[in-house]
Amino acid sequence: MIYQDAVADPPDAEASEPDNAAELSLRLWQYHTQYSPRLLSPAEVDATPAHRTAAPGRPVKTASAVPLVHHTHNHHETHTSQRSKRHLSQRQPGEVAKRLFDIVGALLLSLLLAPLLLMISLVLVRDSGPIIYSHPRTGRHGRTFGCLKFRTMVPDAEQVLRDLLHHDPQLQREWLRDQKLRNDPRVTAIGRFLRRTSLDELPQLWNVLKGDMSLVGPRPVMREEWQRYGSRLDTYLAAKPGVTGLWQVMGRSDTDYRRRVALDSFYVRKRSLLLDAYILLVTVRVVLGGRGAC
Image (tube, rainbow, N blue to C red):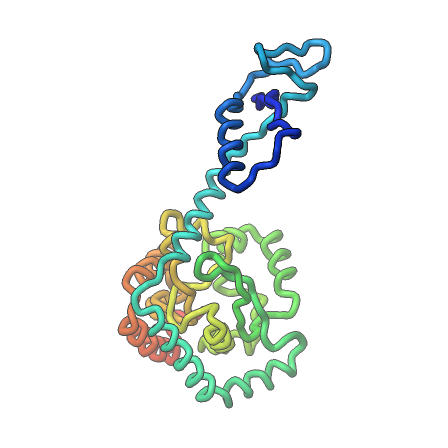
């Protein structure tokens, strides 16, 4: 335990008031140079009235020792804070152009696909449950947002998943490995069609307009998946997640998790409007072909 020496008397309260700020500053400087504070150990200080001792000319007052607390930042908290500040301070070249590209592209696609969006909504409204659901995902700088999708599962999907994983060790291993089930029994008939054609992801155009996502980017993941990225997490968090990306055009559900991480990291390092345009064009071909659908 460390104690702060507080035995010095304050400036004389009966002294005349200073005439100006310069004189006040001088008095304070003289006081602090005359009575510089010291740090005392418990062995040197006894604050009880019966054992008060003092150096010559320095009276001891009751409760003259005040315990101090030294706070040390948690290493993980410090690293996270520094990482967030570093990301916020970095502005990638072409960032404004990419944002304009996202806004114009999302508006055009929303207008073009409006009849299809309405048709899907009418089909889903006949089923019990919401038309669109929001799932928490992490975006740029680690911010959490609601990632929108057309509902493709039964309404109580989370509870059904817990029951499935509890009773089926094989499904549990598959979920822990890939964070998804290839033959997910929770998916409805219309949901399988929406997933195969990736139409379930069209509501994410609203995420793009809000600025949570980009048309092209790394996969939107849950915070629990950060550990899968290891040393590449900083790279992943430097960009907005995308409606589509390299993971979408290079295998989709046929790609294992390690390769997904590598593709996300590669895109963030090499991203450009030209690469975005190429990925969007290839996405159309992949979706129409239904290759590697989720």
